[in-house]
Length: 319
Image 1 (cartoon, rainbow, N blue to C red):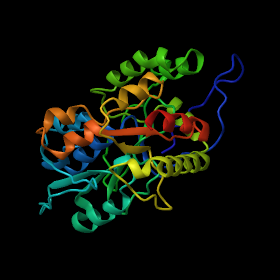
Image 2 (image 1 turned 60 degrees about the vertical axis):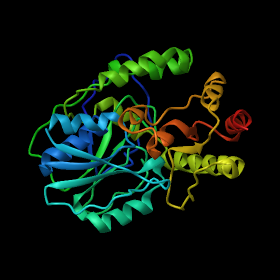
Image 3 (image 1 turned 90 degrees about the horizontal axis):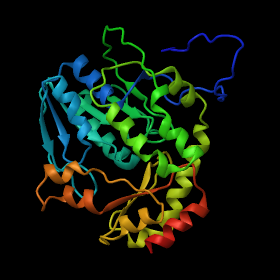
């Protein structure tokens, strides 16, 4: 899918970005991951989807828009489904590749559910899609873009979607460079809100250009090195542990801590960590494992912006 536009000659300069290519160059390029999910629902015409309790609330939006029934399922401490289902042809099973570390589980689920499996790789940008398995990715979870997503499916909708525009969603990214992350936080949250209810659109030219400029090999290498550094320093104190297979590039280092003050201590030291996901506590019972996961797993940053110096600061706060 080639969305490149023809630019004017002369005049003022624009952004100067590296002329590269998309990492997912064979995928359908859309505006958001949730709209990739909606695309799948519409093209497959599913009537019911099994989804994990431990997921972001935005995943409910496409189901409601498409009037698709859904049922939650539980996961265990390995972040793998507890229940097994016998699916009808018009039913699907959605699984999240948690932190980008669950590719082996996905391969097992593909054997069980075949093409009725849907993989949410929003946290696993580098994970390879499996043949005949509908799979989608979110670019902004890994790189400095305001939107953008990739979809692999062999069920193509015969629709001409409009192209998105991203120039008015970039303020949080620009402010982070000029005045600091704190000053762009409210803009970041507004950008998140602006993506709610968006119709399916093609990826914007701006987002596509930024994503074509990224050194994906270097980013992957740095993420793996950072994960291994934190694991060597904190692994013996971590209640959850995943081996880093040679083909895996994680999003974060998931650190399960019972120290209720740790999240605030990190943020007070300008180490910003998310909560995956606050809605889970509302959906589940207090005794459910998913509540513990949402409350106690702290996703420590390991991305390509940081080398060992930044990670030493994380370690010093955590210990």
